[in-house]
Each structure stands twice: as C-alpha cells, then as structure tokens.
Length: 83
Image 1: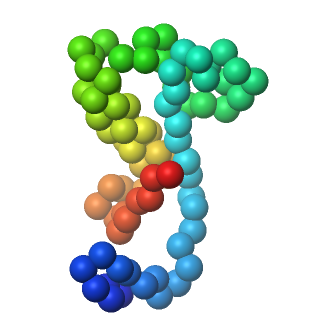
Image 2: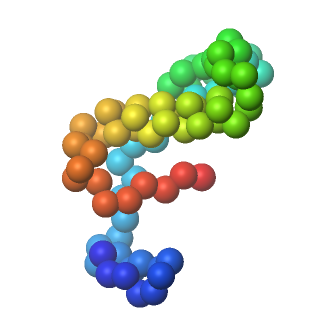
C-alpha cells in the first residue's frame, strides 16, 4: 500500500473482501433479510441513553465481529472500509 497524499492510498494488489458483518435494529429484524444479519437488536438504542452512544457501540461491535469472523489478528489488518 502506497500513500499518495494526506488522504489517498494506492493498493499494490487489489483489495479483497474477506468478511462482512451487520447489526440491525428491530425494524430490519422483521424484514425478509433478517436471517442474514449477524445480530438483531430488540432496542435500537441498545440500552444507551442517546442514539450517538448506541451508534458508537454498534459500530465497535460490528468491527469486532467482522475481525473475529475473518480469522485474522487485528494487528495484521491494514485497513477496513465501512459502507
């Protein structure tokens, strides 16, 4: 991986998607894709007092889940992308 500027990188080899993970709220859990989610929450605030705290908790747990599913140690991962 080569850094081309402050925010731009160039991959020496094409990136590969190894795993994905998703945590969704109660509405998504009721939909037709429910069986494909890693975790579904009964409470969209996940016990937190604000949406921002809940979102932070959801992101951290999603990252930990995808790292665990990949079987790669976190110190061996150069970058992750969220969409």
